[in-house]
Image (cartoon, rainbow, N blue to C red; front, side):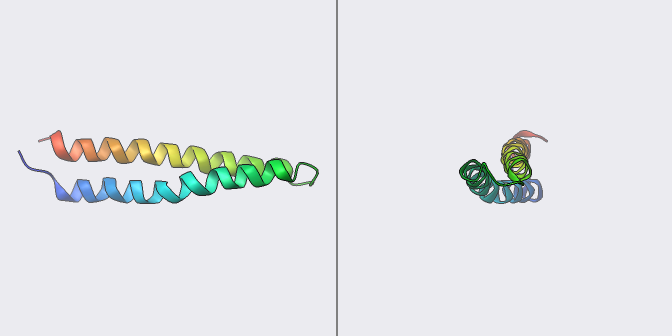
Length: 73
C-alpha cells in the first residue's frame, strides 16, 4: 500500500496556499475593526471574512486530499 505522490503533492499545495490565508485573513478583519469610521469598512471586513473562509476551505481540501493519497487504491 503506497502513497500516490501526485495526489499528495496536490494536497500539500492546498495546504501551502491555505497557510498565508489563515494569517492574512484575521489581519484584514482586525484592520477593518480598527477603522470602523471609514466609508469602506464593510468592504474590507467582507474581504477579510472571505479570505478567512477561503483558508479554512483550503485546509479542509488539503487534509482530505492528503488522506485520499494515502489510503485510496
